[in-house]
Image (cartoon, rainbow, N blue to C red; front, side, top):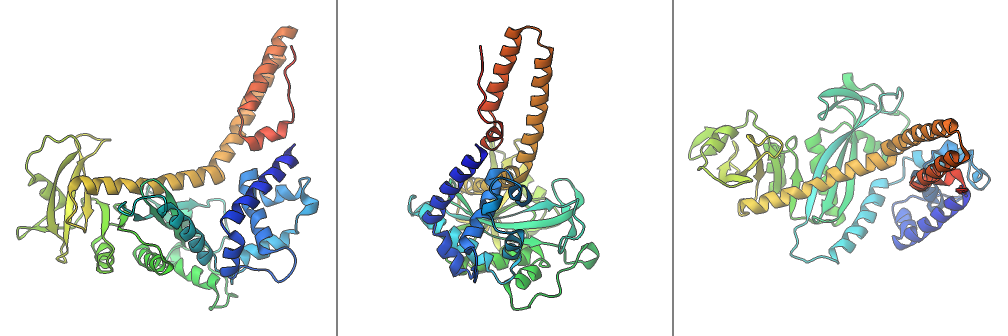
Length: 401
């Protein structure tokens, strides 16, 4: 049954790949093989691993092992430094984004979204460019990488456009160095050099690359870490208005010739009985760039407020808040990818095993045939509610009266 399930998944992947022209996109990105299985076939095998709940070693131990290539084929494919994976991702994303745009009004706001997420690798020891990186969500350093991601959204759909796996620019924080045998002309070497970029520099580089690739957007959305004057000033100079959350730090804003902190600006606002938006004001940054600050109620702490900055001062306060709300789609993207690709699957196996043991214990304590049949029916119902990749392992279970 598991083998039939795998073949069914492969058939669906083939239809999906044909619809998205994956093979053509791989060739255009220089991702090809000179002999043996095609690059499309190898890519499809790697892609399907996620949805079958297996890693490569488990797949080689399954009934499909005889029809699969050797492990060296997969490793060479994944480690080939000359493959332009960024070009592949952007070409595929551009095709998807243009399909989204064909379904929506030309007046609808489109945005670029910038955010980062820590990929923890606490058990790794020799991963290339492994570093101690700071996790803002926990306030602690951890072993791993910072994945800086650029996405596109229309408020309903989201597409990842580009990413950079950041290590650390400080050699004292790097636990492993990059390979010394790579050609400096290959894509792999260039991507590794990007790992040493500062976040603001990486943001600017990714946005320039996205614009060259053909993506367009009305605004760039970012959280408080990225909403810094040098960065949004540079983006504004390139014709990319920025909307981002700002924190009260040491920065000062010029208003009527006076330099004020964010809190002082808020306290100067007229009293308002509005439920969510407390007020807005146009100020200047220390470098003279006009920006609009919108103060909103903090829903988590009702007595506090949050500030959103926009370099487009023509927008009204409500529209700035609405557009900034589109940034949440990248948080959902991070959650879904991390959960579906790794964490939830591990949790599912653990939870499934605990529940299964509880049912077996209950069955062992059943004294009569009727009670045993009832527990067995509970077991069948439990199996029917499992994810398909676990359900397939149990075969055909039936309840006897």
